[in-house]
Image 1 (cartoon, rainbow, N blue to C red):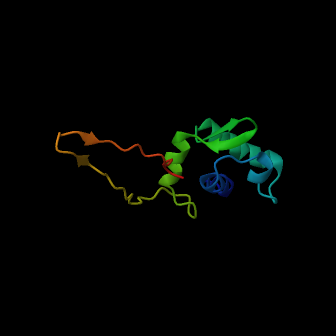
Image 2: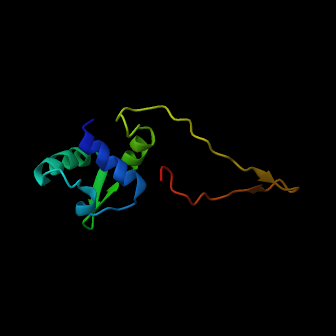
Image 3: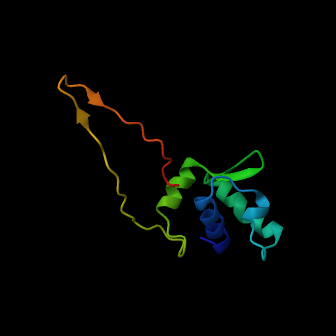
Length: 103
């Protein structure tokens, strides 16, 4: 993966939506940057909504398993907890998780 693409994914992994000018590195020409940005859009990792760029669900999944320093996929253990509660009438408590995955 090219360093510009890694930089784009790294920026978007820490922010929800980013404008073009905040996404583009200062020392990169616009045409070169757009070339790499379009590759990520074509691959389905990024989308442009209301003139702001954001990761798609595919992009969030990809970034979650990506080492942004090397650009190579890594296996990162994921820790999660499940809460299972049942009362005396055998009713089960369900809890809705409100946190976005991968952010």
